Amino acid sequence: MGKSTKKKNKKVTAPKANIQELSISRDGGQIALRGYSYQFLYSCYLILSSSNPSNFFQLEGIEDIDCIMQKNGSNDITHIQLKYSVNKQDASFLTDVLKNFLEAYLLDFLSLFMISLLQKAI
Image (cartoon, rainbow, N blue to C red; front, side, top):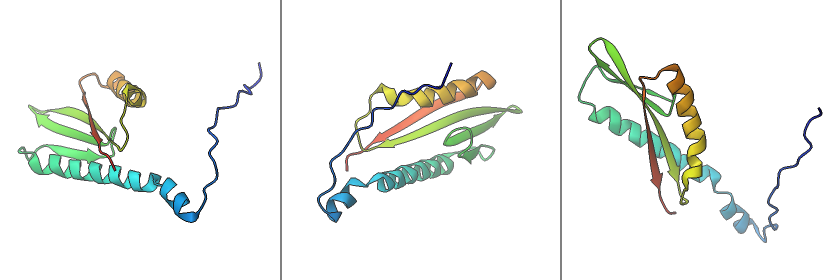
């Protein structure tokens, strides 16, 4: 049994006509920064709107935000995954998120999970 030699289908794009066209096509960093901004602002909102001083938040823990609420000597944990997209999303984007949720759930079945998706046109 040897290694698979199957090649991935790569999309071939035409070369850019000028530097401005190239610059416009390379917007991944800008989109990532918008996602990080959304995550930061959402985190600030959760922290500032929390009315219980014994609640605490871990950013970039198991998920983007882990909200730990202390009740009766135990912790109720909600793992929050945030997604930001400039494109319309179908359900396929959930595959990796749900795999991560399942992994955490199998280790701690009392945890809660939440997904927040912000879709915004450029």
